[in-house]
Image 1: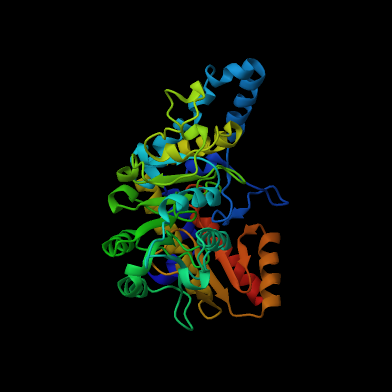
Image 2: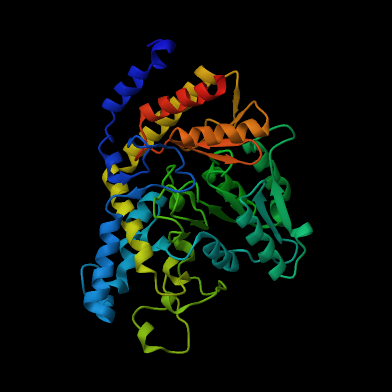
Length: 424
């Protein structure tokens, strides 16, 4: 099929008609335009859409609270005492992990602090903590504060790797060169699975192998990776990982986060940790004894009993992930994101620069060649027309066609809308 045909609206409609996941998109609710039509929601990298069944699941727990009160911990549709365990198998499938290795708990930065207490253990000449530049601010704040908590100077102990001068993406070879050169001084590597600004996907397996060969502990922030790109954390031998659930996992604003701890650390009693009673052995938890006995696996890092009303929407979303299947979802993500990039280059290649490389998830980040004031007006104009993206200061627009709920025609209409605004 020739290039002009691929760029036709009719081709986008034909792709949607052949989409094996086309029914799944109706499992989600979305904002509406003034005319009553659905917006083209391309902001799943920031906040995923609401699963249609989420309100049912939340209401069911409110009903159980009314009907059973404290007995809801042990009785009812989904007893609260073990509620978080319902999230474990689907999260393990998305993380490429054993059920023992994952847990839904807290929020991303809380989990990052909890795991850095265990896995950032500077000693002697090995005291550096490696992050990317620019890291998401919360990650950098956490890294700096952990270094300070050890009585170290961030100017010495914080190691950052960023793009080369005049470039936007971090070169994989630069990561490897840095690990080879500095690895024996690095205590812990903390990098993203997918970089939040550019959408670049890192080769987590290669980074883990290279860093561990130098004696480093390896962790990943998967906020933009889980539910977005295929993961095999167990097989890749990653030491630990953390994530939030309000982006690609569609768990709702401020949704409960998650964590991964590799099986080989599951019973390591030498690891320091900040303990809480929900991480204590289940068989003796309610004896209220004074001595902490950690549960094996990631559950042993839990602090408090989980927020049921916050878990219910995530459970609803994870059921949709299972219905879609990892393979079908990943295939559509590749095809749909590739189609969006093709349209941007075909229609607007002379007006914008795409930052996101071929190694990516569903996000496409790009710069429009226009002054900052024009960009803000452009972003506002897109939203007024019902195209939800976001603008990262000073000049990066991010658009994400999520395979579970976005369509090819939405990608086509978004580019047509962008083109109309730029040529108006």
